[in-house]
Image (cartoon, rainbow, N blue to C red; front, side):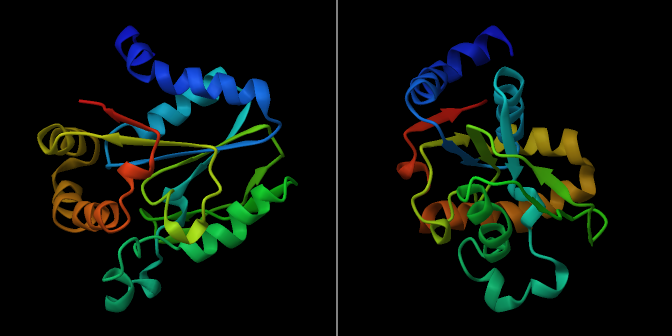
Length: 194
């Protein structure tokens, strides 16, 4: 982690240290704009602490679930029912569990991922604070990015064809979810990662 990143996220890490010193079980959520660094931040946390990291990307809707009605629903782009049933409820049960991730690039379910109970648990990805999950998180973080930097990072990361899908389909769905449920306002920490 660069010195600038360390300084940027210091208030979050200070609070996380407080929670780790005072609780036996912690769930943190990292929500926010695509390409804002959610997976990177989760990776930094995992390097620093012995924790579980669950990725919301594993729970995007499968093609047969992408109905007009579902996609018109704020936050409907994620299979929030499956995430709650197969991951979050099991995590809250504090026992071992597993789930199969959905891989958007292949359109198939991947091999099972296994989790052991850990003190610190990170849910990362857009839609991780969907209201369907209830208020179960001990710490909530929102990462944001300017549209210009977001576009640049997506183009660099995903190429021209995917860039168009992000800009015209997925980002508008994300922004509608953020607005409909006041996601940033519900987070104790909000960081601009430009």
